[in-house]
Image (cartoon, rainbow, N blue to C red):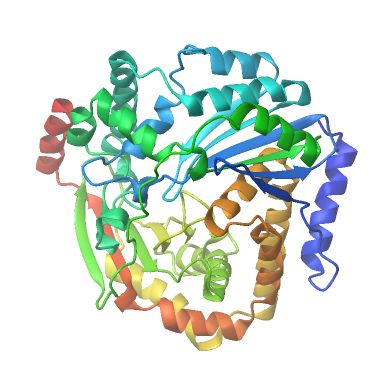
Length: 463
C-alpha cells in the first residue's frame, strides 16, 4: 500500500497536470507485442510498489452476441469462473485471494474483461490460471445450470424487483436504436437463457474466447522483456481460433423524437430517461461530447442539477453522461447515448421537467459554456483520468480496451490533451448538432396505479 505522503504527491501531480494544460503532460509508458497466435500483450512499467494489475479483454460484449443468444456475453463472464479440468471451480479465487490479491470480471457493450491485482510474486500463478481458462473450461450441465440461475436471479434483483427497473440503461438503448446489436435486451431474455445447452455455450466460447480476439495488459513492478517471456510461456501454445466477423452495428439516422410513457409498480415518484445519439468514438466531437456530458451532469455544480434541482425545483436528482452508466465516455465502439436520468416530484409534470431541461440545453446551444465552468470541468476530467491511470489495475484496463479498439494503447495518453483543447465554441456547435429533439429518446416512468401494481406483483411472483 502506498504511504499517505506518496498518495498525496500523486494527487498533487494529477491536479498540477490538470490545471496546467500547456505543461509537458505525463505519458503512460507502454510497450506492445503480438504473439504468433494473435494475442496482443501490452506492458506498462510502474515500480512504485511490488504489485501488478492485469486485465485481459475479449472482443465480445453485449452488442456483439448473436441473435437468439441474448445475455450470452454476460452469462459467459460467469462461466469463466466455473473452473477447468486442471483448475476446478474455486481454485481461481483461492490462488489469487490466498496470495493477497483480488479479481473480478465484467461485461460491457463491446468487450468482456477479467482483472486481477496481487503482489508481484503471484504473477506466474495468475498467468497460468488465465491461460488455463483460455484453453478450455469445465463444460458441465451443472455449471451451466448454476450460472444460468445466477444470471436470471440478477435480472430479478436488479431489474424486475427494483424501482425503475434500470430502464435508463437497460431499456433506453432498446428504444433509441433500431438494429439488434444495439437494441436488444443485453441482460438476457429468459427464453434465450433457458434454451441454452452445453453445446451452445461451448460453441460461443470457441468462437469468441480466442487469443486472436484478446488483449492482455499488465501494469506494475515488471519489465516488458520479463512479461513477454512469461506470456509466451503460458499463452504461446494456445492456437488461434476462427472469430466470427463483427456484426454491422451502424444505425440508420433518427428522424424524429421518440417518446414513451410507462407505469412502474415499484416506483414511488416518477423519473425521466433522456438519451441523445452520440458521434463515433474516434471523432473529436466525441471528446467534446464527453466534456458536455460532464458539464451537464457532474455533481451538484452541474448545469442540470443547478437549474432543475436547486433553482426551479422540478427534479429531486439528476445523473448521467456520455456512455453512462455502464462505462466511461471513452470506451465504446459503436452507437451510444448521452443519457440523463432525472427523478422528479409527483406534483411536477413531465412537461415542466422537460421545459426546464430544454432551457439548459438551449443555453448551451446559444452561449456555449462559461470559461470558468469549462476550466473547472476540464481540470476535473483530466485529474480523474490521471488518477485512474495511477492505479495499476485500472491502467491495465484502460490500456487493454484502447488496444482492443484501436490496435494501440496510445489513446490513453491522448485523452487529457484532447479534453484540454475543447473550446466553448465547440460545445455550442456540439449542442446544436447533437442535443436536438430529433436525435433523442425520452421515457417517462410513473408510479403505477393500484390495480396495475397488483397485476405487476402477480406477474413478478410467477417469474
